[in-house]
Amino acid sequence: MTAVLRVENVTKSFGRTPVLRGISFDVKEHEVVALLGPSGSGKSTLMKCINLLELVDDGRIWLGDTDITDPRADADDIRSRIGVVFQQFNLFPHMTVMRNVTLGAVKVHHWDRRRAEDRANSLLARIGMKDKAGAYPDQLSGGQQQRVAIIRALMTNPRLLLLDEITSALDPMLVGEVLDMVSELRSQGTTILMATHEMGFAHDAANRVLLLRHGTIAENGTPQEVMDESADPETREFFRHFRR
Image (tube, rainbow, N blue to C red):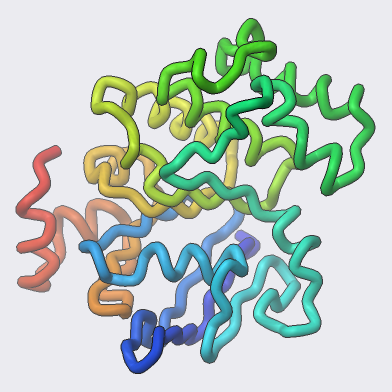
């Protein structure tokens, strides 16, 4: 399968503190890859480098055939091909669901409003929230707000969807509905890189698992290979603390 994302020997430090130490991996088309690891292992920094929120110190990142770490690369064009959802919903509180979902498509990608609203209605209908198009974020549950944030990220059909700890800010009762939506996206062939602490979900939903440790990739394999069968003592100890 075609590699949608390729990360080649990426390094990143903050001051004298190295955070990423030669990271290399790829994400193939229609693949779901789970990025796991303890706090401080470099997951969030890696996600920010992929979305150009941080610049790498060395190495290269490719989105399809585009070297997005090339200083001459068009950052706005690159971000238009990557959908990103963070743990905080980041919805505009003074805008309706419809305005939140369509704003980027209209203002950044210059879609006409009818096209954007038709696309938004189609996506909202898919998750049973078309009737919430006129609602404001404070009228929604946390799970509903996060699902709206995911819909917003999908508006312009991105090649890659980045999910960065999207359930961390949710009440445990609401986590399931968001993970159900991610499972639906997986079944539809969406290419996803997700950083998560939901180990059971990663085990069941991911095609492949990357385990980060001290800024390096300690494990890269199927969920069964990494989470169930690894012979590495540190890996076994890490997953021992999580019950599925």
